[in-house]
Length: 213
Image 1 (cartoon, rainbow, N blue to C red):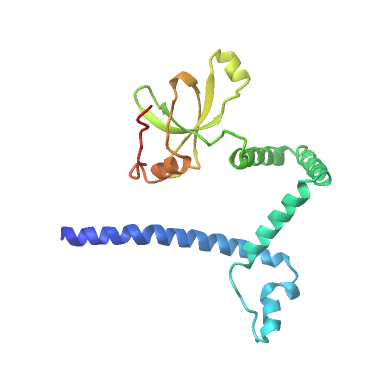
Image 2: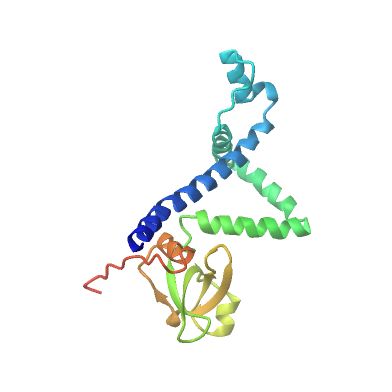
């Protein structure tokens, strides 16, 4: 029975992550395929393929929406990378900034995107160990900001803003401002820390300690 149980667990460890991955990717592709509806019906890929092959029904091939979105994102990047595009975006953001509720949502989303996708930003580039929720207990955290202006001035200390994620859902969590002297910077990568958080601490990254350290 123990051997049978071991085989079942080994099989589940293969199929559960694979199945979850396929489901999430399939869901994302289906959602992006809905963007095809923005194209006039006669120019949609399914109709073009129907005319090409001479079939009675439209030829449905999943994934065209993904290609469309990638093309739109790339073209948008090309357009906003020049002076005219930047001026247009600036005007658009100025308009949104005048709408109370929209202003808060757009500003928060933009700041988050700049933090995550900016190569120059140090946010979410370092995994930290802090004593939280009390001294003697440790939690994983991600560095989000080091220039804290008023907070740093009023505390009189060199402080770091940290994001402490919840488990198993790391997209929610807490913002903690911690003195730098109370922070331990870890060697593990951000994706390794996320795996540990999502797995409830079961998946622990291997630490290759530097013998010179």
